[in-house]
Image (cartoon, each protein chain N blue to C red):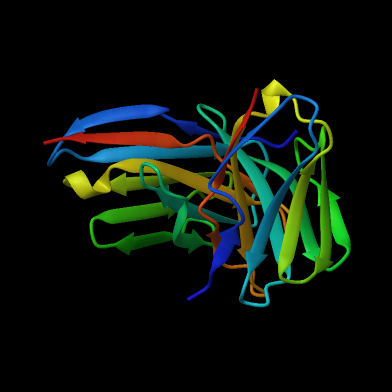
Length: 110
Length: 112
């Protein structure tokens, strides 16, 4: 079936270091979304990318959608302890269907 | 603010019991989803519904059914709970422009 894989599964960084998570789909996506789930919380929407090659920034976060619309990345510059959580990508494959990635759990060491 | 409310935060049920997980959203969204979340597997889609009385299977529908009698309510039913259905269950809704998904707080179900 359709799969969306994320790497790495876990990442520990020192505060101030950069962090990147990668999302790869086995099929072409209509769009891709990114979510953040704080420990003990539920996923919260961060951003949506629609166009091939699109790049969007939110303060220290940079999101990219691949040219072939099969992969995406989230890069955090100079991580802070507030960035702790699990980051999920979610690819839209049909009119209503979103396939979530396996998630990357980020731990930031102060 | 969109609110998606799940009926229980924690639930403990016995093997073989019929279990109902309820989800209500207050923003008149057409699309509603049930996911289960397990470590290392991310969120896996169980069922979704794009309208009242409409439902479609997701990736892991076996052992589950759903009901959408009213637009605001989407119920997940475990016909006969088994220990491998111990998990975190997340309900989500998405509005007509298919933008962001709004999640409920999750139900941590333990089947003993």
